[in-house]
Image 1 (tube, rainbow, N blue to C red):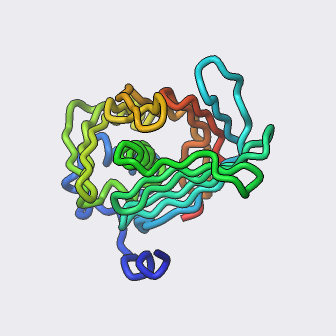
Image 2 (image 1 turned 30 degrees about the horizontal axis):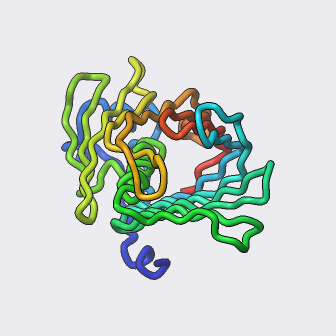
Image 3 (image 1 turned 45 degrees about the vertical axis):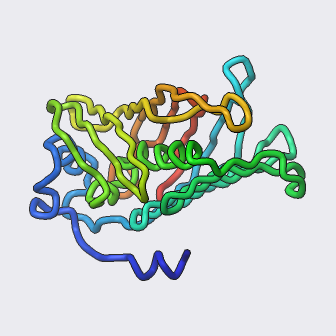
Length: 233
């Protein structure tokens, strides 16, 4: 996997020429966040200061320790989570059409494992909603962008036989503030799923060097909220 990442890395910049095909809202976002005329990131380590998860709407919030890595080309994401209140760890993976969720008790006993197509689709959507946090994704040939208005863009993502659609919302200043899709799956029980509406909300931004980056995220559909420490690209 690492050799393939190195082989597919490239060095280019966000410029008027390289972004000319993008909708106005995406280009405005690149300007206001400071990415325009900067190198295009091809991967990123994401360091979460704190993250919280609900296993169901009726459960209390459980604190997690989370480490994450994203690849732009090929599209990939891996997230490692450790529960603070119980001896359980989990890994959430998407890589070239394959999705997997794995959980272990005491880092020994497998208690959760799912690598169904529904899991792959849902894991790809987790990458999809992070496109504006790691904007190298917006230049991907796997995405079809559609201008709706100055504050809304529709996008369709194709990867390894999977197709998902989402909507990216922006405020009047050009900052990305919400992602929505109806293509994510919720696991009812083993081998039984249903599609649910999923949204990821960028609650606030902070300055990281000369860039403006999102530092607080929450989502509906998977009951997750998190505060971002740093994205290292």
